[in-house]
Image (tube, rainbow, N blue to C red; front, top):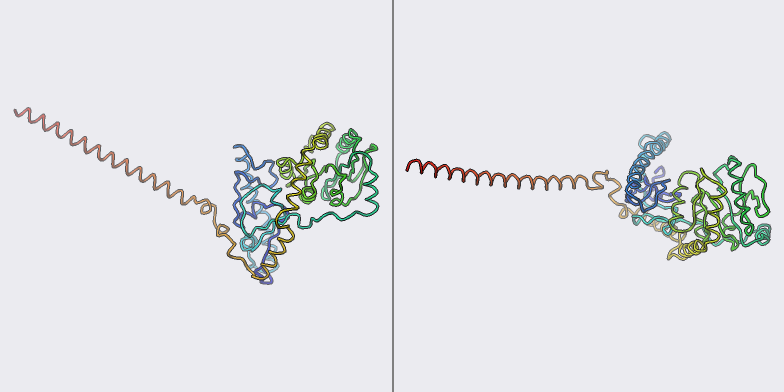
Length: 379
């Protein structure tokens, strides 16, 4: 906006959030589209739909009030009071790039200027250096299980009893080697567990020896795991990770653990399920093949749309009018109200007409009876 360039693209770092759907004009029905951090899937019971409806509206309003308004104030302080609000900029954005893959996401309404470009940086993993190659080749046992909670979570603050529970559960599977990426103090490790300070995660997950990935469920980690066909054990910590865990479970790609009740038994059960039930690997590989072999790859799709927008500058004919509508207009509540009122008036008038006809008939009958009685008296 500052440089007066109409060719705008909005980048979403994960799946489509409700506020973005609202301002871009995309339908976001709370009946089957879970909101951010929701623990529901697209198949909800009536109580869940009630909760999701409320959470969707509250979350959308909170984002607009606490975040978007602050961003608007920041830009206006820098570029003047005539700078448009962030919601208005979102409404007039030409293309929306969503960092999610439709094969992993819930099926939901979309529109032509919504471009799913999840996995845009994913390619076949490059060969690892000699050190990591030897480490993988010399790893004993039937395969490798990778443990990592990402780069944002401060694992040095994880309670020692939780770390010990993980290590003790790993020790119950001596036929597998565990790469344990964690910071801070580390409990005594059994022979089949290797403490890793840093690892080339994408390349590691792409190695044929890796049998499972125990992860917090961040979107980048899920993008890599689903692209490479690795079964998952989810340990969600915060934010959208709980919702991501539900997506994994829904597709049969893995199981979830509860961080508040993390025990040796629960970890052992999850590992047994993923490592011994081959169906998880089969479903993970099927999804990976679908993502890798889809008709147009994410990088190509994004590049073609950027080139197209650069050529034509705007794609206003792809922007729906719904992005300017209030919720009364959007859901046609005014139309429905008028139609209900019209039907009510029609039935009310019909009722009055019937009552009027009945009254006249009764009056005529009464008048006839009175006339007959007077006639008899005169006779």
